[in-house]
Length: 194
Image (cartoon, rainbow, N blue to C red; front, side, top):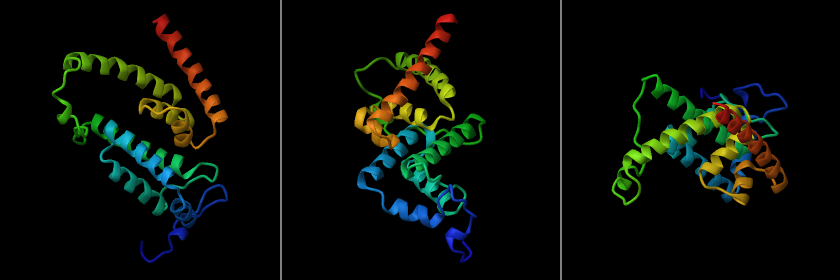
């Protein structure tokens, strides 16, 4: 970094953390918060983002190099999780454009032989589920709370786990869940008309 102090790399306003403040806040994360970040990275790694550790490293590098700034009102976990999500979106977009390889998700080969549904049935289900999930993601794009909630639900999280993932209390979680229900009701109405 050319001998510069990291906090001098980007002029910060009062509404964002400096690099030094971010480093301090990240260093103070609890073990639970670090586990939450790991879960977020694993979630996105399984959705085509690459390796979980690589996603976390790249997200942190972008902050520490001053390329991304954490708003003061956003939790460190939510902010880094958002960067991880962006990295996955970038990787998926690159693959869609044919500019990079499509990695096999970890563990796919080891689960190839099982007594579950046929591969054809699984693919048909994934296509339908994928189309619905894509539509839901499009409807909630830009709403960080709803995006993280959907990601957590898709990852099998409930109650307290979702509160921790979003960095909110149970009352706020209930409000976010209501917003999601309203969004899903809109989607259901659209699908019924189609």
